[in-house]
Image 1 (tube, rainbow over the protein chains, first blue to last red):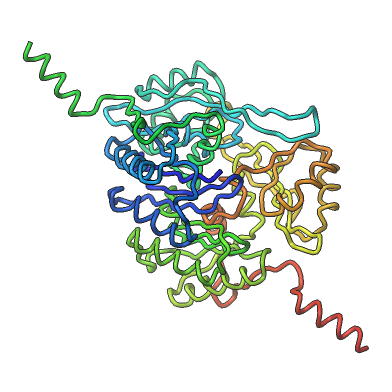
Image 2: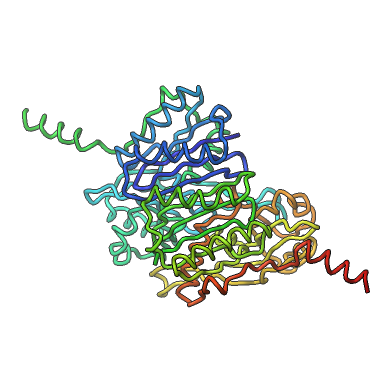
Length: 247
Length: 247
């Protein structure tokens, strides 16, 4: 199974090609350029480098939100365009779950935190539960479990929930620099901040999860697909406010 | 601290720029092209994408071996050339340790296995020991410990050593597909095979370790640097054989 994966849900732009157990290519940048300047040129570049025939891919995975509204639209529009042109299915990978997959095999709870502005984070809590295929000997694998589903809440509320859970936690995502002081002050459980090679979005993690979703039949047509914002956009909020005032 | 990292020790070619907690760029491919066709063009590509001024980097990290002799020579030659031209120090990151860093935070022992041909693997055993800065609350960090230093041995011998250690182990590297059957048959401890987004060389892992080495003062001049092959090359072995026969 060959998957093209895209993530432009935050500042990071990331493109990967994964074929079964092989990460054929990954190209990721974290730089102040708009994703319309980066995402397709990056795909084009790796396409040339690995002599990729886009017709050979089985599905297009995209980090489907939450995240930057503009970033999500660029990612989803790119995936939809490619899906329509190539007649390939799409796999929508929630950004929060994708970020959690950066910490594959971690023994802590995993709490992705994406800065959602206005004091909020896009977040959730997950766990890699170790399972063994045979008793004692045999291969270890992980069951990826959701403890708290993805949501938009204040960091205060998330810290409260984590303190209630009472277990060690690993944070990942661009909320870390924003909320590091608050975490240090208010969190009452041991915690890890993801290191530099794991702390932001990666299309390889999106592709990894997409393989699992694909096997589970969680695919969409390009027409069906739309990003999951988790919150109203600023324009929508302002219109609702205006309508309230007019009543 | 801004680090340029290169890894061409195996089939993978990988280039990364890491600045403190930020992975500014990573470009990795696993494709049957020689590294002389990929490594510098990839650096050139990310340089343009992130408007990189090479004079702003503090050091050049390179996966310094073991690995493919030709790959190591291309990686080291590239790093030496850049180091000489830019007057920047080099950081030699052992390939085996770099691969182990893919499994950052793993609770298993980590055993990188690189196919060294002739029945051997380049390997070693490492561990991420959890430490906490303050008791109970406070941040978790990991101490990266060497259990068995990097070496070239047969896979049989490595499995024997792992069975003696008696703990769960995570394998990473291109030795996995070559020795998966042998592992399944002979290993008597639970084991994990690294997933696709973690199972091969990554310049981001090299950069992550290079940051630590840099702080410890483990740097070299471009003149000093040379790859660490761990074994004699085929040409050297054959010359020694010939000399023996001539005596």
